[in-house]
Image (cartoon, rainbow, N blue to C red; front, top):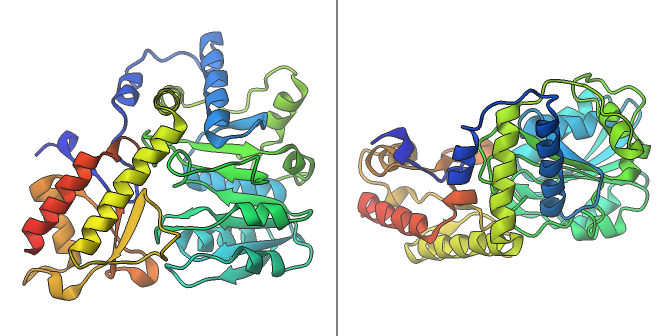
Length: 364
């Protein structure tokens, strides 16, 4: 079986949309070519539609989602600043690491892995933080954290949200929910290979940028001056031309299908997969009412594994015999949980049906 025949249903990249694959074949323009600049501007407009924001400072950072995380943190946090961070998985932990490297005082609000954070706990954790940060869709556990109540009660704090696994897959309302900084990735529900991190920043956050961020490459102030003043575009770095083509195409697919329709397709696949797993005696890991449709976490029942195979062996057979890739657990749930992605172009009922049938054959 060739790599092109594989169905990627793990927590990482899913299969790209066919239109995205075609976009990679476009002739490469110069990064200052007027035609490319026009396409980049149109890409940013499309990002605003999908983020549901009017923020002028909305664009793809030229690196993957972790760079988007770092870009948002280093531009608003410095020594002496306080940040409240919700932690119920790997990516909340990573937020703490990044914030501490900025010299900020980190106030953690923890919840058990597989459980959602209580928004009020985040609001009550500190009387006057500069930033409250939370992961919307925790990729390591398949849990959705509620954002709107935090935005409604944040006061003067800036709200920073990880949307890597939520953008395009489940409802996300940057402006309506009071989100000031958000970052995502291209490789999840947008159906584009990894390589860019869409970021959006509110005017309130720009006003509270630190004077000199610790990172030169991720310093957003030069770009912010251009978009807020309407002045001459500043040259900062060479844009990854072909990746911008791909993101432009992927966003076009989402908007042509309709954002709500794309979200409904993700939900239908998640519902079918989760119901099928429960029917087969599996226990879902994420808290009921907070389960992501685009990433299903399921406990592995040791008694169901074929003799001589551990959980990694089952995943290996799915890949080698059926061309289906699913992900294993991370951190404290490594070896205990499977993480099954239905994202972007991969979010199709036929893929769910094939996975369930393959599990039936392997597990008996």
